[in-house]
Length: 211
Ligand SMILES: *[C@@H]1O[C@H](CO)[C@@H](O)[C@H](O)[C@H]1NC(C)=O
Ligand SMILES: *[C@@H]1O[C@H](CO)[C@@H](O)[C@H](O)[C@H]1NC(C)=O
Image (cartoon, rainbow, N blue to C red; front, side, top):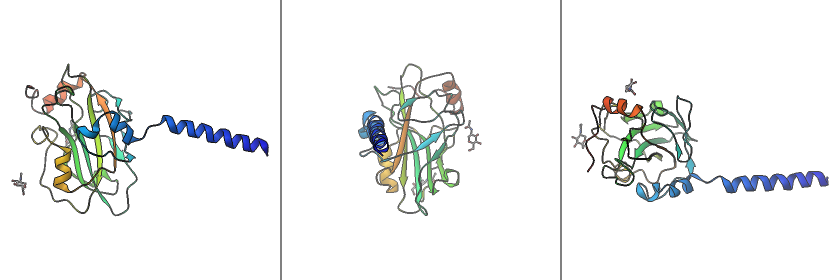
């Protein structure tokens, strides 16, 4: 009996101390200044994001452009009957120090039924990370919004085009689509590697010179 009580107390202490060390996605986003750089309020839930290369997005961890070149699988606890918008954006273009091209839109899918991203409407096709050489770590931020209703949009950007990606804004999109605060999110960071020139080639050549 006493043994059981001691075990229960120990278990509580262990669980409580684990809890202290794991920060919430909100805390992570504040630490990485996603709030206020691109949004006003951080989401409460964490998006689960895994890449075909085997890596996962985890609270600002560093991944390589090679690891994130193909579209990831994104999951969350969806409310039944709800439609969602998923955005992936890089606020650090061309660099975090001097983000004159903030933000670059990497992926935008609207009208996602539940968490079936593949059944949503692709407005901006997925491209991976293309941080130019010497520009340091960029933040790649995923935000999920619960829609008020169906969204009618004629945005259509392929994975071979930069047009419609550069100098975009999560805040403007939130206003335009009437999205409110994000309900879930996550982020990773990446810097230049050998995949970057391949991606820029796909987009029609090197990025315009930063100034
Ligand atoms: C998309 O819709 C906007 C506003 O309705 C319009 O101004 C624009 O020309 C349309 N773009 C395309 C590519 O159809
Ligand atoms: C670009 O998009 C097309 C159509 O969505 C897809 O089939 C193709 O695999 C994509 N290419 C890359 C390099 O991601």
